Amino acid sequence: MTSVQINNVTKRFGEFLAVKNLTLDIPQGEFVALLGPSGCGKTTTMNMIAGLEEPSEGTISFNGSDLSRMRLQDRNIGFVFQNYAIFTHLSVYKNLSYGLEVRRLARPEIDRKVQVMAKRMGLLHCLDDAAGRLSVNEMQKLAIGRSAIVEPRVFLLDEPLSNLDASFRAYMRAELKVLQREFGQTMIYVTHDQIEAMSLADKIAIIDKGRLMQYGAPLDVYNNPHNRFVANFVGSPRMNLLDGSLTGESGHLKLLLDGGAEIVLSGRAAADFAQAGPTQRGSYGIRPQHIYAGERRAADDMEMMGRVEEIERVGPIRLAYLQVDQTRFLSVDEQDRLRPGDEIAFYLTAEKSLAFDHATGARLGGRLQ
Image (cartoon, rainbow, N blue to C red; front, side):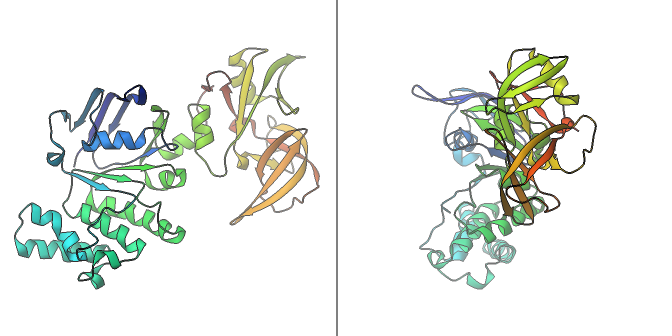
């Protein structure tokens, strides 16, 4: 197995800065997702690991050995693309055996490995068929099997599931995780889909405009975002993020939201925002599941009065859109009791509230439990 070290890597294309001072330490055998919006630099990072691009500054190492002088063909990288990159005119067997033949393995060993991989990927029934006749789903399974069969040091996957239908995408997410455990290979997975990243990865590196925003385990990134960008990008349904002005009145710290609503801050929320000082701008964040109606659950939870504007069912849960002046809160209707038009009291869980510096987007306060 192979570990990957990315040390202060910068990549420029002329005047355009694609990646800036990126540092990541990927332990051997881990599944790491590079997550971010289109154009953020994640594919450029993957291409530099593969040797398709050279860093403008910094180094990339495997097991501590600098790759700057290692040729692409010597890196032993498995690469799976969004568009499959298979030989459509060759048979499924020939696609699977190609890398093994290049390495001049004995024919009995090639046959054995092809049979094992074809069975693992559910392709035994079509080994003699031309790859171009496969379904889209089967093509992607073949692309993954073709890369995995040569047992690469590092497996790179560039949005490999984005062309698949929704049900098969969910199936392949589970399969990829199983395959990664079976192969024991280090996998680096590029995606803009935070659900894929959260469900697949051991760790997630969130990138925006070429800069690393946060790197950590999925649940820690979700619960403890380092900044406003991460808080907004990770989580479904998305976090409520509201801007306003902080004021101190009668010994209470308040956040006057730009939409006209007012939050009288208490507990952890008040303590975290106090770091910004009075009369400063702030951004308040809270996930929909931490907004609730009914009886107050903790003394510090912050009461609001609002109107239920809309109810939306998403699978097994109902989302409620709560309007307070011109500010809208998204909450989870846990008990299926709310109806459009209801005037209700609801509560913001103080211990789950997040505070951000408005100017920099940096998180204020400590970690949530």
